[in-house]
Amino acid sequence: MGFKHQLGLVCVILLLPVLCNCQQFTKSRASYYGTADGYGNPRGACGFGDYGRTVNDGSVTAVSAKLWKNGAGCGGCYQVRCKIPELCDVNGANVVVTDYGEGDRTDFIMSPRGFSKLGRNQDASDKLKKYGVVDVEYRRVSCTFKGYSITFEINEHSKNPGYFAIVVLYVGGTYDVTAVEMWQKEHYKWEALRRTNGAVFDFANPPKGEIRLRFQVSNSAGVKWVEPNFTIPANWKAGASYSFNI
Image (tube, rainbow, N blue to C red; front, side, top):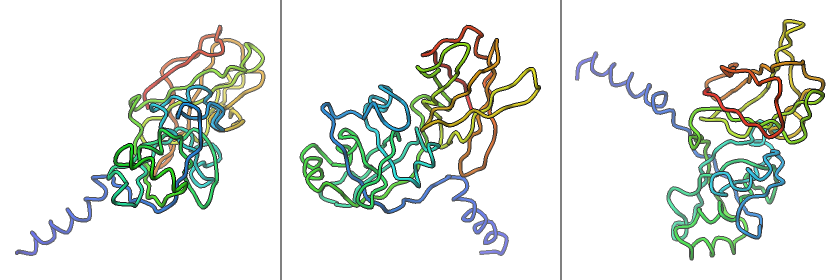
């Protein structure tokens, strides 16, 4: 084989990890919590409410501090698979972060529906539940069930015009929302919203009229600001939801 061909082969090998954007699995442990219907906890620390119970068909999880990221990890999607060949499904479970929780050296405390997806079948899932805690490996995967977009909702505690809060319900891809800012027209500058808990951001005494927001997102490729191609109307109300492409 000539030198040029060898050099070309080396270049292809070196570029493969970049081209496939593959993320390696990390070893950890996982457990589950109990609910009456197997779905998630509507009182999860992300502040999702009932959405956090049913999103991803109830396959949701609480995560440890390193994946929680002070709330920035809310809404993140993970592939989790256990390590007992005769019981564990080769693909494991895809779960969405809706809560914070620490266990017996666990990174995941999953809803019953999420944990059951670890098993090859129902019988295997029942046997896994008897372990209580199982060894797993996990990796971050793209959230795609609502496309490559950001969806946020005006929080139920908001009151026009004195108090404005949003909860970021969905972030496409592998992005985390690390900050939210509001445009101050009178001062001609952006001002940060406060992260109150999980995925909830608020701003006391917002400006009158339309509201313009921008979102700071980050992933392994870096950090950037993204801005919706719309403004929130002056007569905004709690419960209204908005979505825009990243």
